[in-house]
Length: 109
Length: 114
Image (cartoon, rainbow over all chains, first blue to last red; front, side):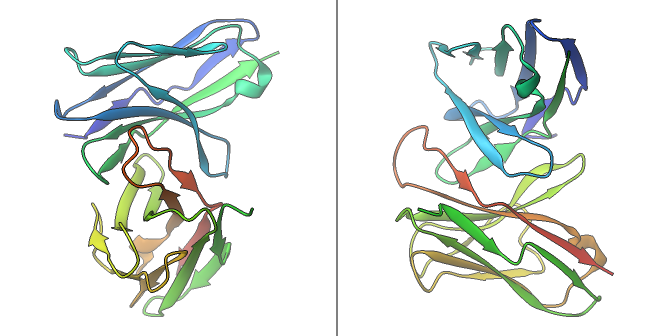
């Protein structure tokens, strides 16, 4: 069983739409959680960390549900520049980071 | 401030050849990591280091060796390249001991083994 699972998509949404991605993790001992963004043929970059109480950064909202072991990312008012692959990352302990395979998003004009 | 850099950016090897990938960071990070990224697999940790002179195995260490002789450099070696090692390799670094510590990635090395 994979440590982290994501719906690969692709998600194709019109500009201005709201889109949500979910990610599930298998190990209940996981300690910290992140969403990274990866543009085509580029390196991953941190989009936001995910806190237990949920957190928001502009148009982006991240939620964590420890009981159900899933993490979500909500993007409001989608922009063309949001087109990318979004990676869910879980830190089990110390240096054990597990990456999901990514969810592809294309925002259409 | 260059962040994390990787050398080379591209490489083609023949089966059985060896090579070394170099990762350098100028952020004084304690932790460094080597990942590989394959289609449909996500990033997988090969080896990592928590400080100068220390290394440890990750999820997929077989066929690779690493060294961290200087804090700012982390080398990944392929002893005898195999086609299964065709991949994109990313190096990353992070500070030690900070909750929710961000990993900073290099631009990647695209390796093809024929």
